[in-house]
Image (spheres, rainbow, N blue to C red):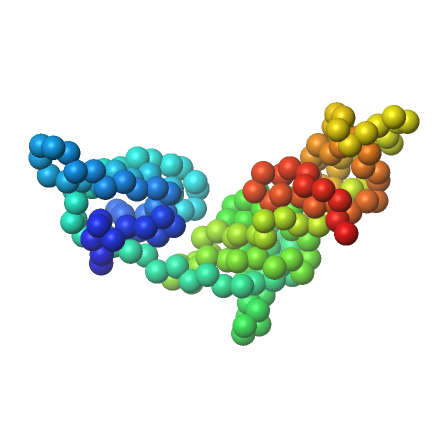
Length: 186
């Protein structure tokens, strides 16, 4: 149990049986009346964002999330199999929990898995991953780095926009949060 005065960004709360992550909060002390805390909360899992106001000093339940370093091993039908890097236990995580991260995951990719009471809630990948371009149209003479973009299919199956000079079988860096091209891999 904690008070609304103790809220911090990224903290996970348990409200009415659901888990919510604090996206942002603001303590407000109006000239008249009692102080209150205005928050933006994000549903875990799901991502639905709501705004909620609490009176200052009200008790809220803080959910304890365990974040584990894990390695993605393989895909088994609808499930993704991860291995805990500390004790080598394997965990099966559903496609719904993995979500958009599946577009950037290859075997042996490291990820941070948030677990609450033995249930995986979400996974966090590194900010960028190195992927190979499996198909893209060839560039034309005169294509420059500061030109347009063209579609490219990556080895995970996702299509992204890349600069015109990128060729097939080239390794590139991709932002896992937005899916944007970041540059060529070294």
